[in-house]
Structures are given as C-alpha cells and as structure tokens.
Image (tube, rainbow, N blue to C red; front, side, top):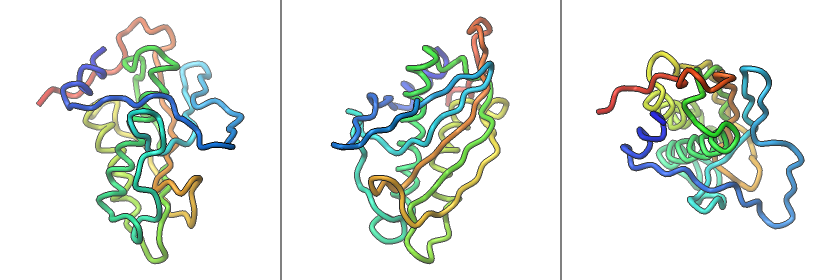
Length: 173
C-alpha cells in the first residue's frame, strides 16, 4: 500500500467510478489485464463523485495551459482509481510502460507536452525513477468526447501474483 500511502501524504483522493453522461454507452472495459501487462482505456478528468470534471473545452481557448495540466493530473487519478478497482492494490504496478495523451486543443495551441506533464509528473512522483518513467506521446486533437480537455490511455506492467509488493514508491518528501 505504498502508493496509496503516498497519495494520502500528497492530499490526493481517488475519484469514484466514472458516471457516464446520459445516453452514453461504452462497450469496453476501462482496464484489460493480459498476463503481466495491463492496458488502460482512454480516461478523462473526473470529479471526486466520478462525474466529468470541470472546466471542459479546448485548451488554448476555454482553458489555460495550467488548467489543462490540472485536467491531466485529474486524469491520472481517474486511471489510478480504475487500476485499483481492477488490481486491488496499486503496488502491483511494477512499471509504467507507455502513455498516450490527447489534448482537446484550440487552433494553434502547440504546448500539448506541457499539458500531459500533469499526468507524467504525478506518476513519476508516485512511482519514482525506477518504475515511473514511460514512453509517451502528447498530441492535439480537434475534439474529444464530451468536450473533455484531456484524454489519456496507458500500458503498465504488473506483478501477476501480487506477491512481490509491487513498485518501489518514490521517497517521501
């Protein structure tokens, strides 16, 4: 429970399961475990109750770069919540392998890497320099579902048995 302890020390709380907008149906799992790999479907930023977080819209128009960064951080918490529900313990994640970040951008906005850093910075803080670094893309999109500002998908490696205590968390500050 190192990762969850670190989240608590940072004053962060995982949101509840996503509450889809009325009429929306998503016929796929949020998390798919295959052997020692876990594939995480695209997540957006969530409020504590699992509803879509505000503000929504395009980064570089309705949202500032800083608001986009915070949306990416909230998306990281949403992904961690889904991983916890599926795996039972976030310490089973032994490595973050790949992250694909999409930013709902206004025309001409090119600071997508700085926005997705909101996700990466939190993962690196929690998992440290051994398990936290990941291959990453950060691209701009003309639209994202439900006008969310950020959508992120990921791939992680896990301890299949849950017997080794998972990743080594970053040192507490």
